[in-house]
Length: 262
Image (cartoon, rainbow, N blue to C red; front, side, top):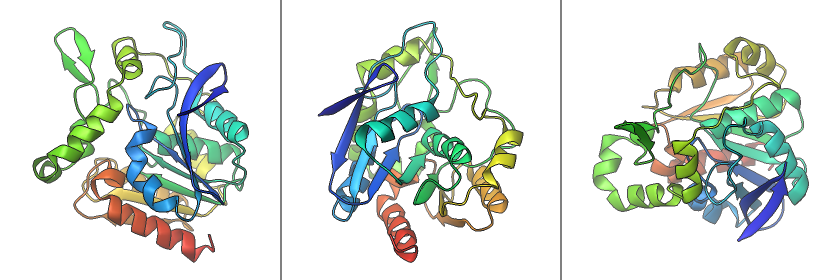
């Protein structure tokens, strides 16, 4: 296992293959291991990295009662620490939002951007996300809610169980029971600010979304705001299309990168 210090936090990351760096960023409640299918495929052609954001996976928890670090600052620190210059960034859900906010700061610094399960919402999220399921007075990390379609839950119980086990670490349970306040000031996660900011992004952008994802309208809006982007809806997939239909996700990603000489 590899670890690196970023903003005073001990971050766990995967580093496989060589060449052009591709960095995978997980969603809320996720972890680097959730990308294992993509890492296996893409590490044959690229240097593939995936990391556990603070309060996730095997990375450290931020102090209780204090705001957690801005995840864009964290991404910048991680890229510098592992020497991933001009990266291809691929993020799902929260990870996709991190990439969008990073790209607003750095409109042409990435070789390519792959956003999945995310876009520009019409209003800020309020209350617990769909991955938090209240049981009694506590919030326990029990499952993945709307991440997958009912058909996937029924047909692939082993993959679902593997996904849950990879995410259900002591670090994540601590953060679920004692939620930290997110820091998202530069730029803020305000739909109006984001809508104004993404139009300046010049890096090639692929937007992948499950055809049944509840955030599909947000993904479609992002595509409208960034006309040069490519939008692909993955049939038979919900919020975590990168895992539920990992083969289709990898195919779309590989085609997009090849089309841009990557």
